[in-house]
Length: 375
Image (cartoon, rainbow, N blue to C red):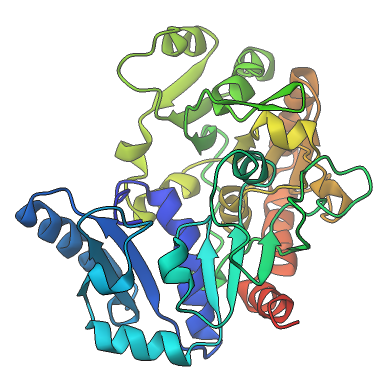
């Protein structure tokens, strides 16, 4: 988090966890790891900026930054320098803590070894397991393995389990932070915010795309078919070797830079509020593997009263679709779903908020997550 402070969406996703846990009455310590840039003043400024952001959410007293001079993944805790609280406090907290939630293999073996019980949280099912099958991410150094890949234990699931027992959990939202807001009007765009990635992963003679670029380019003609505004906040970058900006703009997309329109959690939230709905295209691996993945960003749209139109990754087996949350299989179906929302917006908006409250409330979802870590 500390190295990606312009990522308002990334921050908003993570904040739901310490805020939600604290609201349930749990003692929470957020350990943020950062590797030194080699320049002392630069490091200190980054850390100051980080804590300034936490003050807004009254989380600065719940967080410690550990600064490492070399490899933060391999260096021991003793080699780090602590900011926010002292290392003695961190040591006492670790010894008394009941559980470590390790997000996306962020902690290396030396830190993992200090905790009595360790749970790995996987937010990118398929992608993480394929990567871990060819790289040592210390996945096995945990007692509990949790994934938002809701279909990982289904008989037809293609997600490699790595010889582990995976338990599923539901991504969620801290609803007090995300009130429903009024309709921005029919002129507001269907939008989304995404990383413009290109990556491919080989697996057992096949190749799976984890590229958001290829995901969205499949639907490049949607504005022409739907005859309404669409906007994509995508970090295509200054090089743009395939000339994607021109290609999308010629087909009616308005393109904006995510760090400019969603560079903080507050800006990210306002960007979603200014949108009519979300049009989302998941990584192809989630569609092809039917992982059951559902986006935390889409949950933020739903909570704001913004309907979501997205490809189905298998989540329709557990979530209601058709009103507020609509799915499609091709660009023609996507255009039809967009028209359905515009034709009866208030109905879809109310249903979107109801879905968020019923299925993604942090109070219920966090209790279930923690229960899954107990056995």
